[in-house]
Every structure is written in C-alpha cells, then in structure tokens.
Image 1 (cartoon, rainbow, N blue to C red):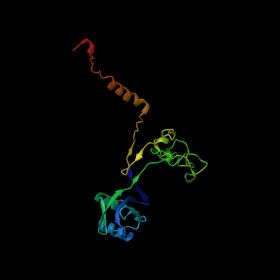
Image 2 (image 1 turned 135 degrees about the vertical axis):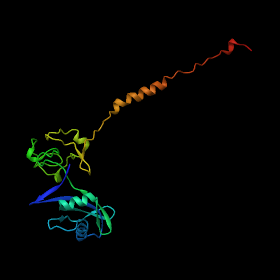
Image 3 (image 1 turned 180 degrees about the horizontal axis):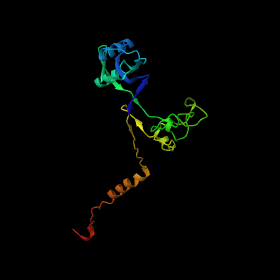
Image 4 (image 1 turned 90 degrees about the vertical axis):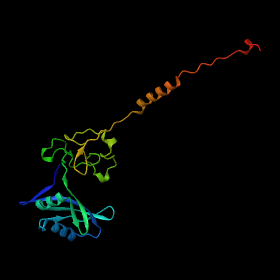
Amino acid sequence: MRGVTKRLGLTKLNAMHVRGMEAESTVDDIKDAVVESTGNWDEENKISELRPLGNDTLAATLTLKTEQGDKIIEDGFLRVGLVKCRVEKRLNVMKCQRCWAHDHYMENCKGPDRSGCCYKCRKKDHNAKECNSVSLTNKSYQQNVPNDTGGDQSGVFTETGNTDKKETKIVDKKQSMPSKIQRSNSLSETPKKETRHINRRQHPH
C-alpha cells in the first residue's frame, strides 16, 4: 500500500492523520505545531475540521508539502500544545468505483458496472438507505454471493493498509456428533467385573 501523495500544480502534498489532541485544541494550534516541527507553514497546506475522538480528544487530517509531511511522519508525532500527538500517514486503499473490487482502478476494470447500484445488495432499483437486504459486509451473506467483480472482494483492510484474507472454517455439528457418541460407547463397553453368586443351599452349615 502507498501513502497518499497529491499533486497540486508542481507541488506534491502528503496526507496524514493526527490523533490525541486536547479538546480545546484549534486549527491555529496545529499550524503552530507544524511550524515548530518543520520551520514554516506553506499556503498549499490544508487542515481538515477537527473531529472528536475517544477520551475527550480530537483528531484531524493534515495535507502538507511532501518535505514537511515526510519530516513529521518520520518523527512519528506532532506536539500540539503540550500534547505529543500520534501521527499516521494516510493510506491510499485501491478500489474500483465501477465494480467495487480492491485490486484495480476503474480505468482497468473488466467487471460488471455497479456504479449505480445499492452498496448493500448490488441492485439498481434503490439506494443503500432504502435497502432492507442483508449487508454484503455480513460474512454469512458473503458466502452465498459469488465474486463476479473480476477482482478481489475478500480483502479486509487494517489500519496499516494491509489486506489479510481470513479463512473461516465451518464445522458441521452433525459430523462431529458421531465421534462423541463413539466415545461414550467406548466408555460403556468397559469390561464389567465378574460377579460370582454362591448358592447357600449347596453349602449347608
């Protein structure tokens, strides 16, 4: 996976996420932090709206000149105010906007055109908000849906941008029961102790 590098004119921009800022932090605080870390603030740099994160903290997405972005990403943090905030390079997840596969872009697509389909059930007569079908993200539903995109639909994306294919093993309870029954039978077949009965009439006192 590659990090996102945008080109604006002749300037390359680097995108990254900054997490863990104090709830009182502002955009100006982030700009000051970038200047403190890299030496200046470029007019082409951008900061997204601050969004709430857990534990009463904030997060934001920065788009900086490549040189500045590389410096901050190499450091691994950005000190905003008094807080040493974690920095992660934003990753470009490959996805075809035509067939929704994750191993090619629309320009090279050979799969079906789903550009106007519902994201949940792949039908064209409604949108996802109106859909009552089971979502394609449901694993049990995916097992019954053929992959006709001409690409890879099974990748699960993690924070690092890797795709790991998880294999789910289904065990048939009916097939596993005979082993339990066989085990119980083997226990019941344990040889019983032989009991000898003595007829008292044959041995008079």
